[in-house]
Image (cartoon, rainbow, N blue to C red; front, side, top):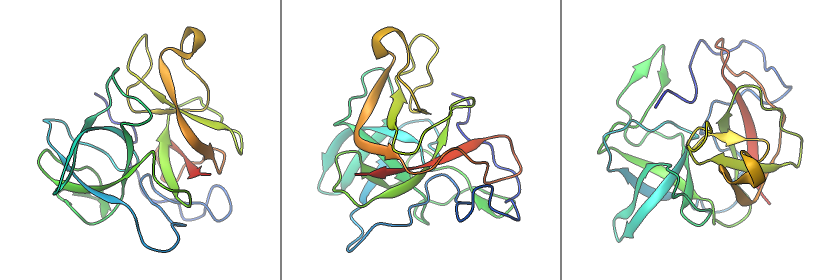
Length: 186
């Protein structure tokens, strides 16, 4: 699968006032940080901000994989940008979690109070307060990618992340053309 977000140099100025965050950045979780430990037990690299599928849960954390057509809102989780599992640095920016590396995720079913930056599909124009959809990788949608509207006939190529909404419009946090948006758990 192609990368969801292509990094360039960080913009010197925020493209939207006060919002220049890279995908995976969370910045308004209140109280105890309730992200969960997870392991990438696949052969794919996983990106910060990507929606992944929880395969199972053990006393050591979640086992996750890249989203597939079997993704449900209950099995969805968002990868948080942190220092666990760092293995690739490019121009000073952390990029991906390699297979077998630990990471932190926020299950889509987590309590309210989360605000996280995610990469979104080019051409999407999220509206403030709009619903958040995740592609299932069917009929041209990109598995694990964020959309601002349902994909496919009757929305069968995407699922809605229940109680998550867009907290920003799209913006470009780096010199690349890749866009991001902030989503929040209501």
